[in-house]
Image (cartoon, rainbow, N blue to C red; front, side, top):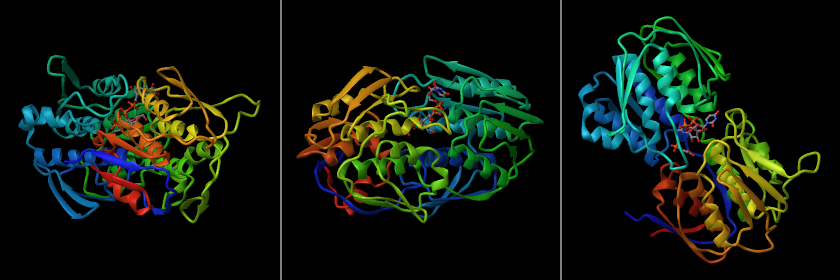
Length: 435
Ligand SMILES: CC(=O)N[C@H]1[C@@H](OP(=O)(O)OP(=O)(O)OC[C@H]2O[C@@H](n3ccc(=O)[nH]c3=O)[C@H](O)[C@@H]2O)O[C@H](CO)[C@@H](O)[C@@H]1O
Ligand SMILES: C=C(OP(=O)(O)O)C(=O)O
């Protein structure tokens, strides 16, 4: 398998691009099929490494998976092989993606026990799972963590609804606890819940399956336990992180791009953050049109002080788009402080941007000040390795804007979240090949 992209940068792109279905939503709703023995049909499923691995894992557990078309699947979790969870195959596969952690809640709810190896995902700093297991414990489960094997086991003969104040608004943690609580006895009140669109979509799907969840979209969820759930149909939202990435791509390369069918009202603060970086966006129907812009100027705060872009749980700005904002700022007019509050190793990729000619001061692992080049100096193409999914795409955007050839290695990191990205960029006129 060829695992690098070779890019000849500096070309203006033009055209329309359709965002894939949301990666992080997919990982939640596909895990939720374990909650019922009936058939669940899911559409707009992105064809990306992480989602394909989860689907394969479900198949290994005994879920009957049928692919109806390129992006539509049915899942039927009639019989699950509970012994599979102690096998080496599970330990190896289950640990290879972050999203696999969300099979534990449904397994616990339906079969009274669940297991998971310490999950993978991006190496972007410490990524604790306490919220998940503290929540399960509150519902009456017992868990143990084998530090040698890096393996978690959770047991519960009878989950009991209760009041849970989460220690942090964890996205996958909230999803996991909600999925455990829907089949628990009595009422669970979940406070400090995360409420990203991914979670809103999950909760709506669970309600269609017969669950009784209220407070969707807020940080206070009330879940009245039910005895069983049924089959349903679900369609994934477009991936808001892809949409943000394409906005950044258009600005940095000075290209005219239309992003189709974005479900604008689900994008929260995302378009506003890019607008404050000086990027012109037009909503046409439900498409975002970004005109070719010679330059874009980052606003200051009202009092004239330096703009700061930082992450926060929803409806704050998602941490998954900060790397994109950082790279876009490299060619802006003006300066910005990028403050990545959640993850402590997500900004180190600026080293590569520095090598390409960017003007950035990495203040500490969480903060970087970018002094924009205002397109007066073009970045230089280099060879680089993608450290994580969003840094990878940011480097790809930098490479597309740069003079000369860049090579990006370790593109599995990019491909775990961006579907057929080389082909889709080629369709916009990009010079990118897989080598
Ligand atoms: C598969 C999936 O859905 N992955 C997403 C999910 O990961 P994931 O669910 O793993 O991330 P969490 O929401 O648990 O939080 C990530 C990290 O941020 C810290 N933290 C979290 C909440 C908070 O209020 N303050 C805080 O500092 C935590 O210590 C944690 O280590 O949510 C992250 C945060 O949006 C995203 O980057 C990931 O793309
Ligand atoms: C950090 C991310 O993903 P994961 O949680 O799967 O590592 C991401 O999507 O930006």
